[in-house]
Image 1 (cartoon, rainbow, N blue to C red):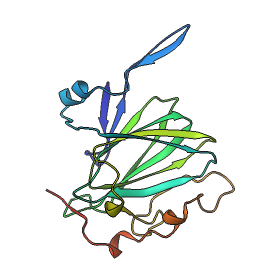
Image 2 (cartoon, rainbow, N blue to C red; image 1 turned 90 degrees about the vertical axis):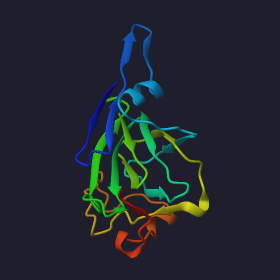
Image 3 (tube, helix red, strand yellow; image 1 turned 30 degrees about the vertical axis):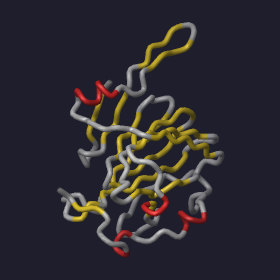
Length: 188
């Protein structure tokens, strides 16, 4: 498995090996020992799967607060997304900065988003399916989010041609700006 750090080094791209032949392919998409050898020690407890029918669907920016904060390992099994992680750890040298990467079934890559980061993705193709592992169970009382269009974050979402704004859930359309929330996480 190849592992590459992004501009915020805690956020990483993982690329599992894929073996193909005339029948199709085989890939080990998660191996706890392989990640441990790379210094990544996580205990995933839940898998999630989403389908977004329309290109330009934005899910996020989401996170869970302590004590139910989640690390996420995200992969696309059909289609493609622009995936974004925002550092929301007060006191971090990269606080309020974001990194993004295209994650797709064709590229067979994944993104590891640690706790302390808000996470979201914008679908780039029809019928995009995303699967992700998390290190804490869903906890509604700890479920939080940030505005996808927070001007302080200035995330460059690659909206499909003809869309002025993404397709959003009601919840995601009314999330607060980062500066309007408390310090949910601290660096350290």
